Length: 182
Image 1: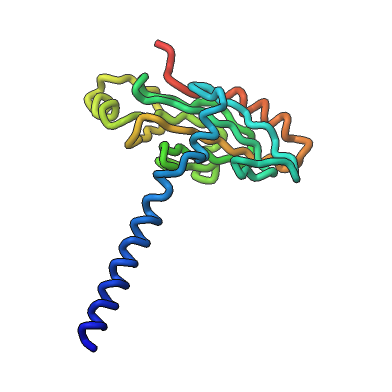
Image 2 (image 1 turned 90 degrees about the vertical axis):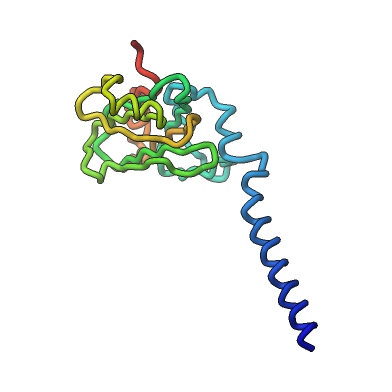
């Protein structure tokens, strides 16, 4: 009886471990991820405005139809990346994702930043150089340290009315993204 209980307990524990390992490993084994879908867009070192989501149409990135989206891929191997510009006076958010979909940094206009966005994104080596004052930065630059070099920046704007979307998209297209020209 005790021997059977021990075997049952061992089987349950082994099954639980296998279950947890499988669940944790599946995301890294997936081939069709948001990152691979975004790689198809030409958004390297520039803001790309994503087309508005039409209700009932395919929405592979699962975007909110009420928001305007701009994406920019950066590679910190090329040097620090910067996101700069002025956004409309309405709700906006900026999020920086690594390849696995983990948010490295996120902010909104409700953080007291206002309409001006000026973010510098650095990897650990670049941050060290920054601390040693070997990289010059502008005053007021928000410094973000990323753990990986390949990043995706997503800027979301929320036009209060649909008729304002073209104006918001135009403001979004004026945002600069990528390494600064020397």
